[in-house]
View (tube, rainbow, N blue to C red):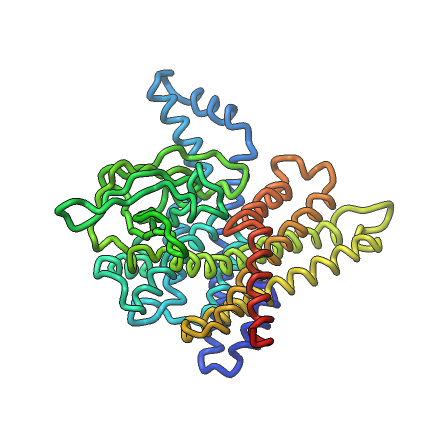
Length: 456
């Protein structure tokens, strides 16, 4: 059985059936599905098995095999225990070699110029195999989309372009540094404390502050850092965007959090202690980062929707296995019960709806990218991207919740992945804005559309 869901191939056929490269798109999707299943999924399951074991017992075993107990032997054993819980670098290299990071970017920039919905189909597949690996590349893509927009608008420095090309080639990985621990997530642009001050008699800025809950904090090579460069004045919130590479003096990783979700992805704090960057590190125009950030978040919400749909599909597949082949009530499999059938129908509809909305939003993104001055496209695109993320995240939560319930008490055992799926689904619920923010955004845009049709 193919690891690719039939709904994915059907949608690509519907959207690109007349495209001269349609067969190549389908072949690429199937090939990536094989890679995700054979390499990513197996690596994810191995780390799940390692974490399910008693780490202290594992550590004791390694120590007992050491000829002499000393501090170095203990450090080595701890390091090896932690290493066993990580996905090997080889898996990431294979994803890069496949071309996933630059798949949806233009050939002049070094990309493969594959339609964005096809890229979403691959990202959904990656999210099905490993939410941790999926979010690693989704966040990096969010940064790349922001840099691409500024590049095409002629507002990206040569340095910025070089970073973009390295990201597209998979030579670097990016992180998106917006959130701060002291500011409300939905109000971060108004409450931002991190500041960038122009260097006197210099050609750049000095950035001071910290960013919190940043994905890829340990693995990213470069971060887009949002910082205040002037006081808010009316609609101008005075926020600018900078590229800051790991290793820059004064820029370091602070605390790295131990998480109960997407455990193969790092999340933590970035500290900027008078970090000096040149004018070349400024992305676009000073004071315009709110606009850039919203563009990045809108595209990022589509990638989160794709990952959430993948997780929902995996939970559904595992639910079907339990219902049809596994647990029984008397001499009946659970699928014979009306309640189970109702849940199957409900999940099937929700997952198909989430996928349809995600790929539709991806298609609208391509239309908006080609007509970025069209306000009608903007409204439709924002409604679609926010709606897709909201729908898919809720579909993932529902499917994972049903999976936990059909397993019953055995779902709480570490070796059972059902509870891990449920915890992973919260990433998509909270990530790239909580439902309340998305609902407000959708409603705001729908009101604008209504007033436009009324001529008001």
